[in-house]
Length: 188
Image (tube, rainbow, N blue to C red; front, side, top):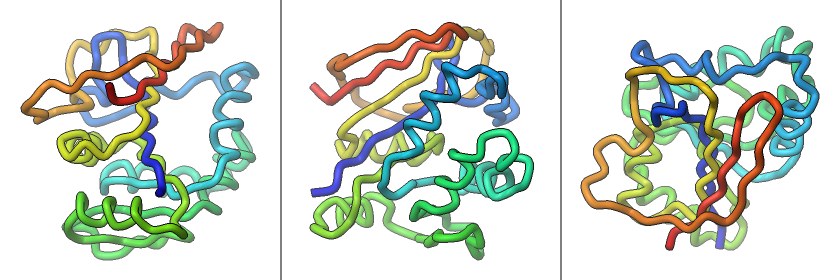
């Protein structure tokens, strides 16, 4: 059975995007070798990337560009090469290479993909609305949060709209010189 991991960056005050919907605050210095090695290592795995429309549009506007290739060539190549699924009721087409657009039934489609013996593991990047729906349905196997040393004072929380508390078990942590801390959780 395919596993589903959520990988997201959050601020110290718990927001994954700021008041304008931007995640630019989570972008690090391109010369930060320790952080870039971690990001490249994460990107070197296989699987299917899962996005909501907003995150997909942000990712598709950067990763297939010459600028991304110059700044982070390993990540840019992997982001384009991996299979991608974007969930959106409003997006008309998804032109980024290896992307499939699904217009309905997020939870049902993820359940189908998880049951398939041939589907690879999946990773949700960003996509707060998608994360909240998958959390409500109990479909997240691993939650990997990067806590950034910044306070935004407002924005969107990752589990916006979650009606019942969910508990998680800490499986690991790693601190970086840039102040980021990666926390890995599994459902408890």
